[in-house]
Structures are given as structure tokens and as C-alpha cells.
Image 1 (tube, rainbow, N blue to C red):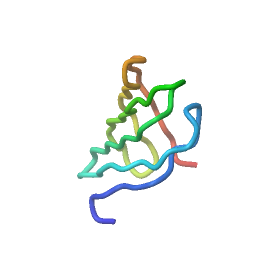
Image 2: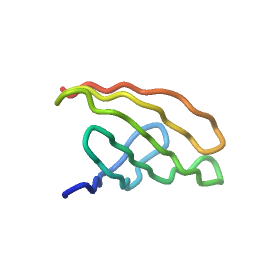
Image 3: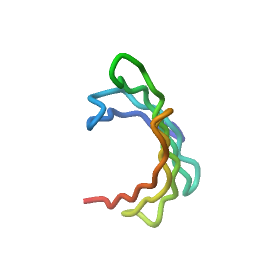
Image 4: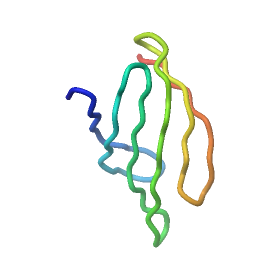
Length: 73
């Protein structure tokens, strides 16, 4: 809705509600993941490339950082 992004993460860290924003070609979202007995904030920051591609960085709380790419199917 507008610049707001909402959804559900489903993956290695289980399932969690996510929130974020889309402004121009910039996108970011985050969610809280359960890691063992602790919770960690997982944050993604990316750039949209046209209507089908996205790439950026991801930070997994104290577990580390990485990069991601995505292609719309």
C-alpha cells in the first residue's frame, strides 16, 4: 500500500511477519527471527532493476551479513 511493504517471511528462520518500504527503486524490509533461544532482527536493503530483478544486502543480526539477488518468476 503506497510506499509500505508488508508480507510474510518463510524460510530457514521459520515464519515471521515482515514490514518495509519501497521508495523509487529502493526497497528495504525486516523481520524478527527466532535463532535458538534468541531473537534476531533480519534486515534487507536492495535496489529494483526494472520490473523483474532485485539485488542488495542482508544483515542477520549478530550472525553476519551477506548479499542477495532475486528474479521475479
